[in-house]
Image 1 (cartoon, rainbow, N blue to C red):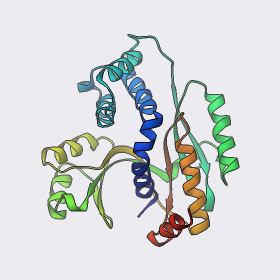
Image 2 (cartoon, rainbow, N blue to C red):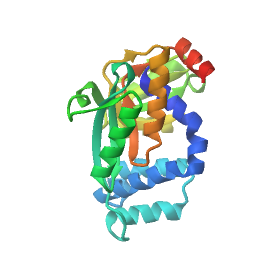
Image 3 (cartoon, rainbow, N blue to C red):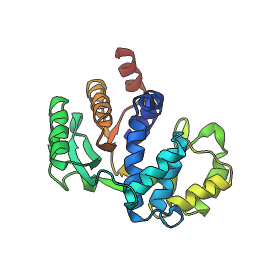
Length: 250
């Protein structure tokens, strides 16, 4: 199981707690606002359509969604956010790619640099890490929700690139452009997904042992809690055995 799957699982466990602190809503509102810059009609704006779906999944009130979209289209006044990526290295030589939305780039860069330095990481020059990741659509389906052959048939017919088989889940991989079509095909086939997003996927993974794994998971959580960090991507792999040791030690 790769870093993406591990972190996605950890984040799902944290979801309820995060929602109480309002972090999920904060990120979703920023995404809605930024996506709406490309047009306020979700039918003609796939990014906004996905952002609305995520907001509804998080039980965000319709009025909050509407106002976030209106701030993006300029119908309502609001903060102007800038989108950019930051690159770095984590414990064990892992590569980090952070998707950022900020109203103050200099402040955010300084804060992220400080967090990395204090947690066994370093900031990297632009371009030194990004090449290790590819943008892909990921749809995760629990194994007990669908027959493998049926999932393969539906996903591949809709344009998916691959279906990876994990211990408890299937990961449907798509190109960014095919993501919407594959997601719709799965929904039409009544195949439930536990995670659906367009994200950066590492081309190779670094296997971490117990100490580095513990440091990496702590760093990921710290970065993930920063308000300006929309997503954290890293190329680490942790075996189930090491994960159990880390969990027991924690």
